[in-house]
Length: 352
Image 1: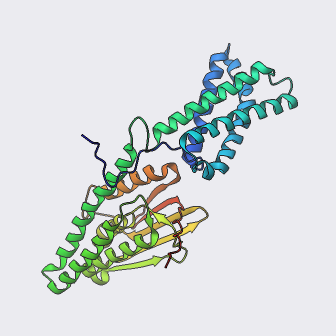
Image 2: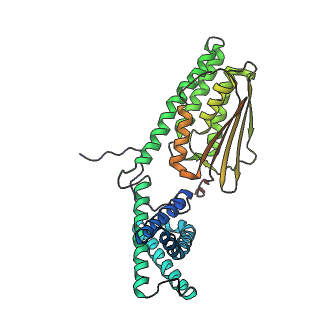
Image 3: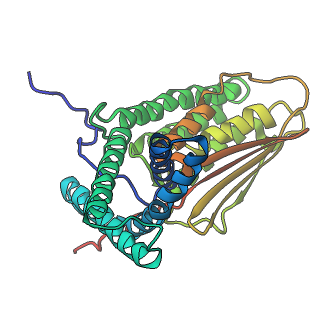
């Protein structure tokens, strides 16, 4: 029986880690230094000797490690264009070359601190290639297209994105139901708006969507809620510094707005203001949302699935480069999401 493949599933391919990703860099530093510490403990003859061995190993290791990571950072875009085998070969050769270069340079500068000779040079090169190979295997197992569990993270990300849509539908229907009896005509208009809203929400199934589409969907959702809440719901958009070519995870704004409306604005008799800011600083994209809240009591207590969904999707897509922080004050609730600034690819000019 032929293997079945989902129409949304990405083809399984081997890929090198993104050497510009902060999580990859930090894990590389920690893992290599952890191996060095174990080697120092294995070679040491006493507790005091462990410190001496760490210093001796670090004299060669740290310059090699920092130079290697710097070169990989610069070469990362070029490495992505190579096949997996070509890329791993380049990475291994680069690591060995840097090791031998630093070894010979330090041997001339610190002749008494570095053991030199063909045997020591070959041993260091061999150890470097082994450690580099083990790191590449680790990252290959860890990335979404791993050998051990093919597309596991990718499938989980798709499942998270699919799970949030029924939640979105349920709450949007509730918003319409709130005005059905009081104003059937407005409810009819709201249903038409909801149909447009879901057409937009279901239109994209990729990992990232343009910030323009995400903001348009969020504005339409708020328009739906304003039919129900009227003047009690006030919204302030600050998008002057928002880059139009930025990409965001789909359905990241709407759950935050839903939380602000249901837990912040609706419980207040006088309503309140939802403040939304989208802006860029350097290579980072920022999303901030502020809404008032009641200090006492609860309203629409839910399982907070949508917000935990956002946290998990950010972790899967951006690792440690994304952050999600919440500040809860006496009478306010503020969310701040920080993620890498990913630019929308340029579209080739159409041929008439």
